[in-house]
Length: 74
Image 1 (tube, rainbow, N blue to C red):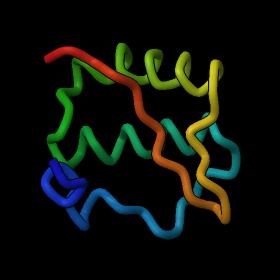
Image 2 (image 1 turned 60 degrees about the vertical axis):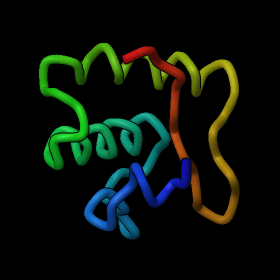
Image 3 (image 1 turned 180 degrees about the vertical axis):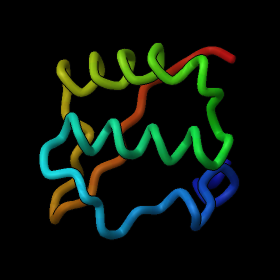
């Protein structure tokens, strides 16, 4: 699977308004809800899972780039 198969250009946010990692995660999850990649009713569960993952190990790549994620079962 390629990243382009699951990520569209409308999900890429080159200029975030958020200024810290928790606000960035919240903003990106909001983008996923708005683009219907996750259901509104699942957003809080996903938000907690991503924040738990980020607490255990950062998903930052560097140079202002990060791919916050968490493994899940559909």
